Amino acid sequence: DAKTTQPNSMESNEEEPVHLPCNHSTISGTDYIHWYRQLPSQGPEYVIHGLTSNVNNRMASLAIAEDRKSSTLILHRATLRDAAVYYCILPLNNNDMRFGAGTRLTVKP
Amino acid sequence: EAQVTQNPRYLITVTGKKLTVTCSQNMNHEYMSWYRQDPGLGLRQIYYSMNVEVTDKGDVPEGYKVSRKEKRNFPLILESPSPNQTSLYFCASSSRLAGARETQYFGPGTRLLVL
Image (cartoon, rainbow over all chains, first blue to last red; front, side, top):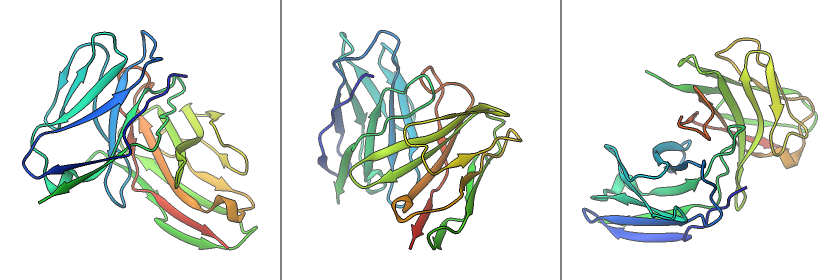
């Protein structure tokens, strides 16, 4: 199973962009890269996912390295409501979302 | 509104007293899963179901049972709860395999304390 590595924590100022990195050097050619986040006292929620090309949606952007061994979740303007634990995941075929420790994002006003 | 609901949200029980945590989704999803979340261990899959009457073990199935008699419901059963099953439980659903293109929708969680 491909493993992901993320920093334990990051800080950002409100209204500034945030780049959350993820390493997945053992990714296979068919693994999708998913990002979820978990706000305090809530269940995980989907943020974005991609395979090879960069992806944008209303919540964030996902930049995937050309060799796919790393990716970066980009929040263009962090708000206080974006404070959460962000998980980079390579789901298994049995629908198993292997959530690791994730990155705890703190947003300072 | 598309959602996954779980009940109860909080439960305190004693060792050995059977309990059921219900999970229901209104999105007509085929795939449903149960996870437990413990500090330092992330989310670990307990059981999953690919459709009605089709269930299989995840990473940590010991001490749990599930059933999938209807598409929308996927209850988690603890026949004889023990203190090591004290945890935060999440139910999730998706229309297809999350490993492909689909996203999973998670419920709000059930916090269980077994004394």
